[in-house]
Amino acid sequence: MKKQFQWDKFIPDCFLCFGLMVVFAVIMFVPTGYISLIVIELIKVIFSTTSKIIDTCYHMALILNLNCIFFILFYIFLYRIRKIQYRFYSLSIMCCFILISMLLWYFAYCANYFFSHL
Image (cartoon, rainbow, N blue to C red; front, side, top):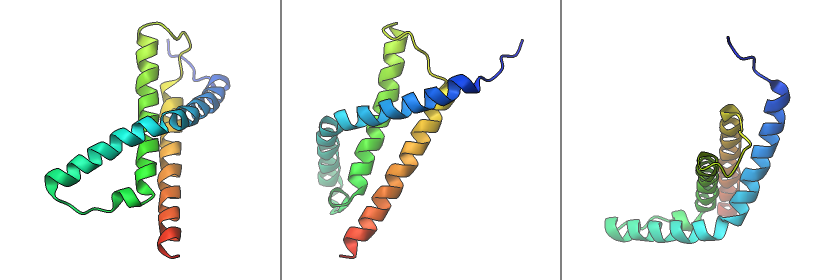
């Protein structure tokens, strides 16, 4: 028997997932920023590039986007070891991740354009 899609569970799931992704991204911004800064510096040394990605707003968008991915992995890990009983719809997690990613990269593009024309 095919299960019906429940909109009354999907909408609160989206709001909850969106809020948790934003909070998790803000909390984990500094540790992930240091790790990504080290990785980018190593890539610059290995390949001898003089990329200015660190000086742009795209670096912050990349860090926040990685934090959203870390949230999804952290949630899956906690759900697998049965520390969390609540199960999100996978569609709500995907929708929130896509929405947050699009917003982050759009804001980074706008901020980079604005700061480059000052």
